[in-house]
Amino acid sequence: MKSLLRKWWFWLLLLLSGIAGWFLYDNWVGAREWAAYADDAHRRGVKLFLAEVPPPPPVPDEQNFAATPLWKAAGESRESLWKIARPLPAVRKPGGLQGPFRPDLAAWRAALLSAGWLAPKDNTGSDAEAVLRGLERYEAPLAELRAGAARPEVRFSTDWRGGVFDASERQLQVVSSVLEPIFLRFECHLSLRQFPEALQDCQDLRSLIRALEASPSLMGHFQTMNTRRTLYLMLAEALEADVWSDDTVRDIEASLARWDSEARFWSALAWERILVNETLERMAQARDAYEILPDGFCERAYTGLQSTRLRWWREGQIAANRGFDQLAGFHGDRGLVQLVAQLHHGTLRTSWIATPLETFTPRRCAYAFKWLVPDLARTRMARVACALTRYRHARGGLPATLAELVPDFLPQVPLDPCTAQPLIYRRTAPGSYLLYSVGLDQTDDGGDSNVNPTTTNGSPDWVWIARQPYSPAKP
Image (cartoon, rainbow, N blue to C red):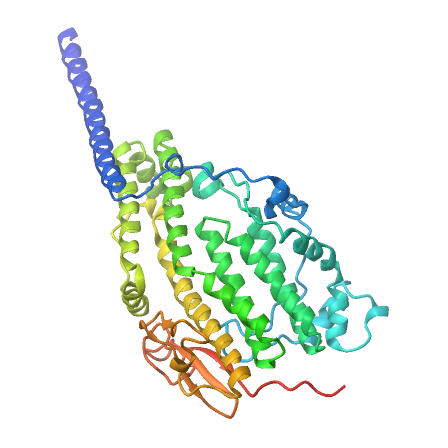
């Protein structure tokens, strides 16, 4: 009997030693594979961790836009001066620069009155006047925003060591909560023919964009693109109204030329890779898969077992980084054209493996391209619209082609990011024009922004509409 027990113990110890040896070998292979990938990435100049990024030089508070009390309050508390309950959803068309996008000021007036923002005694005058009185709570923070915007630097203090889950950029919440009020103020000022005030609203939004551009993250770039979309709505209306001087339009066009959305996107994509690697490194060292466990019991048990293997983590980390490498292949105009075709046909694939680590793969980065391409198109169309306004002021009419804007009003004709060909432009009624990008289907629908992608194989053109020049009514 004792001999039999000794044999069982011997085989049990041998089995346990084999399992331990297999785990050690498996972990060694995973570490070697990751080290080989990291060495190759470093030779290509790719940064994988925060420690590889040199810290920015310090900025004195008196020169830092982000050090004003307004932004500091947002960083210290979720309840900021800007956070309010929106009494009514926006009624402008969500598609962007096409179609009727003016909000219903009468509906906003009623909502502000119902929410208690507008006192009954102040509910007098036009809808625009009443809505402005209902938004008076924004006067103080907007004045603080304008005062701080004169500071030359923007440097927010964000702790990025938490990676994807824990890095918090409170300033993004501030901007998100104030977009609609600024847009409403602009609409009211334009309706009341208070054109300097409408220009100030645009300047306020440009200050917010400047603050957002200081964020290196992909989420910061998402918010920047969303804020720019609102600015382009305002710019389209102001140019249609033709109420700004040449100097003002030239200044706006110059700022648009400095907004290199594509370069900013690639920078944000590189930062996203760093955050992903920081998060995966922390979880791999702790063998902690809690934050990525699937819902099913069997799947959770399997993932929990796999997460004890360092090699499993390293395989997922390598796959995620290879996904980033693949996305980086779409750099440049021709790369964007290939990307647009893959986005439209649903053939965009990246090389990451099918594990719960997909949570950290560039899946949302691939989705971000769907924001990048329209944002590039809007920015380029906005530049052309400013140049066309200046051309009309100087020559008394619109050009026959965009080539006539070069070189006096534009250095070159901006390209449609969907085709790498010039944006499509034609004159319509006297003093009006149609300017558009062909959209994701890369098919010219003649400027039709109402193609229904659910019932056809197409997608709408992205249109910048300019109607008859605005003539304010006589008082």
